[in-house]
Amino acid sequence: MALDIVLRGVSSIRLAAMLASMHGDGIAKMVHSAVHTESKIRGADTWGNVEPQAVDHEASVGAFSNASFELPSETLQAGDEVAAATFSQQGGEEKDSLGKADETEAEKDPFAASDRINKPPEELLIEGFKKDKDSGLSDMSKALAGLEITSLPPAAATEATQITVDGFEGRYGGVEFGTGGSTLKDDFEGHNSAWGGGLDASEFVGPKKVPKDLGLGGLEFINTSEPPPAAVAKGGDADKIVDMLVQKTQMKGPEMYIVEEIGAEFRESLLARVGLKGVVYLKTVPPKPSSDNTETEFSFKVDGTAGVKRFVVENSKISSLGNGLFHVRTPPSNEPMPIMKYSLLPRMTPLPIRVRLVKRLSGTLLSIMIQYASNPDLPVPLNDVTIVLKLPVDPTLLKVSPKAVWNRSERELKWHIDEIPLKGDPGRLRARLPLEIDDDDDGSDLEIVGYVKFSAIGKQSLSGICLGPASEGKTDFYEVDHRYASGVYICN
Figure 1 (cartoon, rainbow, N blue to C red):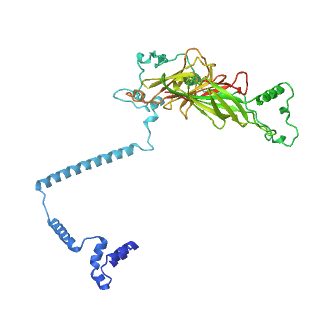
Figure 2 (figure 1 turned 90 degrees about the vertical axis):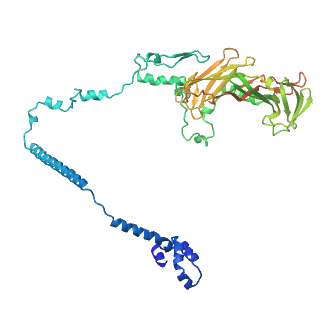
């Protein structure tokens, strides 16, 4: 065990294991149990278990060492014949190779005259091309024979397919071979039509450059007593602008208006759900710090509430008198304050615009169309309407009609419509793009959603609710322009 510690070394863990496995604390017991202790520490078998295996091993080695055998005479004779034949053949090849080496050394005398001196230059040039003696073809013919040339498609495959689906009329596919002699520039710029007119920077940024301030950006005028000459204007348009601002800020009395938000969801051409909520705002005369501010107090009535589902009022500012009459009493404020909220019944909610989303998958070509039409009962047409189409993938090729803005990070197409007429044919927005899908996939799991955003200001509210004085001929407040806008207005 001591020798094992010297040779292998000992760690704190191993020494602890050795001491723990020893029997007793006396030196005599440690000496007598050293053999068993070492076996336990190493994890090896005792000599009594290993001795039979060693004896069997020595017996096997002795038996194999004393074994002998002899080959038959016929086998030895055949082996001698094969060895003699092989030796004679190798000797002949060595002699032939030595003879040829001597001949080549004699021919390759660096000072000997060559026959190529007498040959004309044309023959020397032709000898550089190797010829195939069997076929008689040159190297150039053999190289061209190995090229693969793609054959042109048949005439039937180059013709376009006529599509007569409503909203997607036109000819799709086909191959056209132009003979007009177009240039590379024309062919490259022709791809801009896929985005409905290209990505011309002039369509988004004005041609005028933003003027830059000179000097220190206006800091040079701090120490002067007079403003810069450009800021001083006398007479004419300046007086008109001041008068308009003064008239705008001056209020004759309290003002009230309605702000409504409508949301709807269309599934193809069917209306799945709709909702409208409105808020009545009161704007009082701004408080004046120099005088005593009296509370704003008056009565008003609300008409056109047949389709209202629920009414909620601000109890701290307004109280109900019955029969649609309300009384408001509140201190003045600089900001408009909401005093009433309501929601309409779904069946009584008017729709400013109806939209329909249709998709068609023909092979790997996905065609999408959005149809939209305005409500003819609106008092004024909708202006500045935005329709956003969210695509399921980021397409490599995209064709839209009419012109749209493509947001690659959000995978959204955005159309801006200046005005939607109250009467007329429905408008159409189209987009086509290729998809990488399986042949058996019908595209039903593709998630395509369209969002509609609009807003309007007018004398009438969208729900038909109007505000009026409690008694005829008395003007306690002024009803200003009402507003309505779209909330979650989608089609899928």
